Length: 113
Image (cartoon, rainbow, N blue to C red; front, side, top):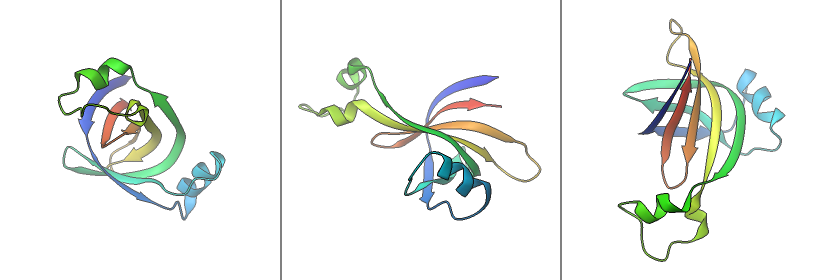
């Protein structure tokens, strides 16, 4: 089951140093820093593996209709990086797959249980 969100999250970045996180990030090629944890709804989620990473173009009208859009914005504002990660909020809770999007801020955009 998959659910869509647009909630702002706090993301912690770092180098994938050990274990499955390092192995999964290396499969994507040379990646400097990756999401290592994020806080969503007051709960810390620790990233166990990086499943995918891509850049996607946003529809131009999202920028035009954004409340905080500044006039004369560039094309960079129409792109966002998306990280698909496997993370868990604790040992007793199972892990899930999360899509974290970053343009000017970090947002959780999809959760698959």
